[in-house]
Length: 246
Length: 249
Image (cartoon, rainbow over all chains, first blue to last red; front, side):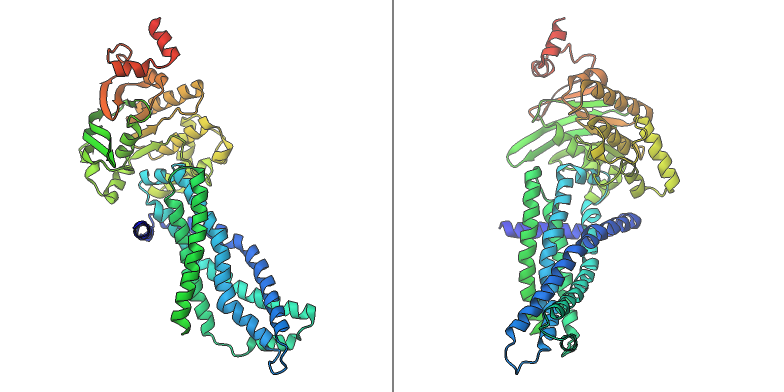
């Protein structure tokens, strides 16, 4: 029963959030701030994790290929496929759920307990629209950029690892990266990224918006935002994979 | 003028407001007083549209505010200024941006005009050279003054203040009271103040409603509140050693 109530409250909040902004100029300003907070500030962590993961995938592939019948270009191919199909859209989204999700929930939650949301409401402003819509929009625009960046860096990380370890030559690795390319994998990755970005921003926004109490509850909402977003990302990963790849 | 007609409000089985009727007059500082848990905050939240009443009407002039939908309420809310207990300033905005916020949302003023209005209201609340500071960098009294400046930046018809003196020293509290009283007279607003500070009651209580266990127990003004024989009110008014001594003297 409580789950149904929560889903109902979430849908109602999204209905409020997806109304026309009161003032376009103010919305654009909020959007720019959220691009900075939620997007640009995540570049560092995405870069480090993608670079190292690409390198690890490539080394593990090289280690596992001991059969002479399997060509060495499989290393580049597998690294590319894993980065595009699963690692960048899903694992990076899980990391962003931790970083961005907790940030959104704690920011909005703090505004709730310090009456800033009430202040917006009594000014005649739709607080859900003012606070949550720019964050969802920013996430859905910026996350695909971060994911493409992650894919590129992951593949580059794999190449770098091959060059340092000498497990494969540059030419063979790049040949593998270019082999059997299916453009739909990028479409698939982008669809997943958009869905996950929406989940991260909306679930975290919902959790923060409905905080009742004080700082302890804000912390709890922040944790719940990360947990719920992560679970939903994994569930939707399965659903989307089933829908799009089979 | 704001008219409350037979207001009732309950949470689950608990009736928090019981059949309250009262008139907040224009150009006066109207005080709602009472002990913690008497229903003051709920009454104010109903007046500003954060809670819906179960029974009765809240009329702003001739308009029935409590009959409106959320969307319709917003039109009246744009005529309100609200000072929250903690100030409720936006943390990520500077003082100037906080005061300018309602102007950005609801006016088509140029940046120059908005800056001029911001400086005027900040000067009016005796805050100069604080424009570029963030709320975390200013004192509690200054936060209240910035919140008042934000509340009056759109020249509202109605000003609501929820415990404007809480957490302030007596001197600063008196200054805030004076400021609210002066602004009420200057802009001819209908001001409603929620308080349990007896200094405020004596200083600016032009019209007072005393709530007790969710009921309107007594109404009057600062001139008669110390002379009443209402037992519950006297218990509230003379609950501190200071007021008891004043009464004895």
